[in-house]
Length: 113
Image (cartoon, rainbow, N blue to C red; front, side):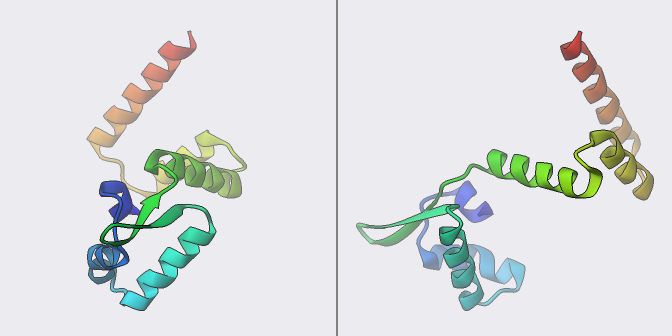
């Protein structure tokens, strides 16, 4: 999907060239993934001049939102605070991380006032 979000439409060969080697996948694996994404409605395929091309049907932002919400619901009962606490305690936050989190909280508080 990243390859298609970066540049679309792409042929199967272009998708394979962009994704197979960096991920350690063979061409067959990439073709299987394309088929699965078509079945899930994440991609559309169409014959155009010059070959068959695939286009994403879901934006990266919508995908990230959906996956993030599913993770939050599945692991943290939909609660954001335990999610953030988990990552804050399981991973050393840098001063930059903390500064960004504080800024985000301030902005959210301002929006709620």
